[in-house]
Amino acid sequence: MRHLVAFVIAFALLVSACSNGDAEPPLVSTTNQATVASPTTTTTPPAEPAVPAGPGRLVIVDPSGNVALVDPDGANLEVITDDANASAIYFQPTWSPDARSLAFSLASSASSGVVIHELATGMSDRIETAFPAFYFSWARESDRLAFLGNAAGGGLQLSVVDRSAAPLRSDRGQPYYFSWGPDGSMVVHVGVDRLETLDAEGSRQERELGDPGIFRTPQWLDRGIFYLERIDGVGRLVLDTGDGAATLAEVSGGASFVVSPDGNRVAIQAVEAVPEGELAFNAAFAVAQAAPRLPANRLVVLDVDTLDWSRVTNEPVLAYSWSPDGARLLVLTVPDPTAPELTWQVWEDGDLGNPITFVPTPTLFRDVLPFFDQYTQSLQFWSPDSSSFTFPGAVDGEPGIFVVDVDGAGDPVKVAEGSWVSWSPK
Image 1 (cartoon, rainbow, N blue to C red):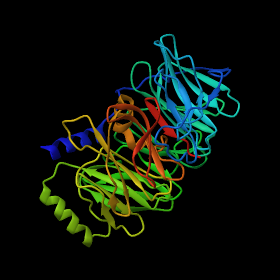
Image 2 (image 1 turned 90 degrees about the vertical axis):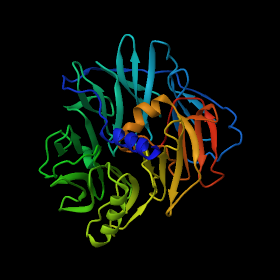
Image 3 (image 1 turned 90 degrees about the horizontal axis):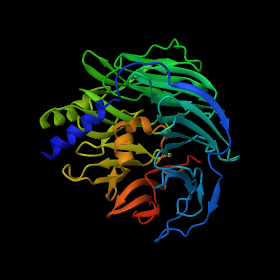
Image 4 (image 1 turned 135 degrees about the vertical axis):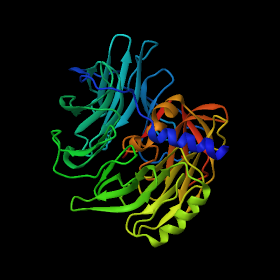
């Protein structure tokens, strides 16, 4: 029963989508304004026991619903907004890749909008929207921001703006998943049958991709575009380099996957209701195939060059994310489907580390985990040096923002209060 419940959870996450329908673009107007709040900096004692500060900073949403920055040891709290209240909240602050800007949503009883905040100047630009944006992703060069929101009349709207919040282009579809390519290009997976690349202006590029299989998010790295196609009822993980496409592995149903930042390894979980005997058959059959058939309902790591694969878990997992150096994989499992707790474990060199049990915040559980493969391209739990990770939730009944030093004791240490956290990429 436990295995069955875990499978149902994983499958629901794989095929989950947002509201249905198409509608007009929600972008209404763009206004420049001063800082969202007068930035203030305070120094607070590090949490006990202290953890190494490490590089970068954490952006959080504090219990009042305001956006703030804090060091990874809990010191130097810096307020970004200070006017959240019962009728106005901020959510989903997202770092630009150069760590110079933040983008986040503002939802109030009077209006909603997207805020682009420049950390060096403390100045902000705001885009008024018909509905609050619920997902943000910066282009590689940090010169563009894409965000998704529910459009008037239903459906999803993708809007792309430049760093000063000037609108550049828009697109519609439902569900909508995407990955940034070079120079403002994108690969998009929209609905069930649209998989294509778009140039910086939003025009379709002359780059033929296969028919999309059952998956959510493509990933465009320097090495090429990774996606799942479906041919004769078989799912195939494909790497398209622009000079041709290579099949890396086959799956019997759908799959989710996340590619390491260097493009050398893919963490992939094929999802299908199959008997246990078929899993063993698939594992043996992989030896004879040029592209291996991966076992279902297990998380595995595939080497892109050799096509060898290693099993990470023996049961389905909810989410996973590579460290920036590609050496470690953060894995989220369900130890007991009847209990609210989840478990983090770090996979490295073929081994899973000690489990860390926690209860996720509603925001993490509701907004991020069902779409984790999209969020791994914009939300960073890992520190820039891959030594630590952070998460929002409750540990032993104590809610807050926690940091785990993987190279140290490996215990979660509370560093701040809040419901959302993302580690800066630099």
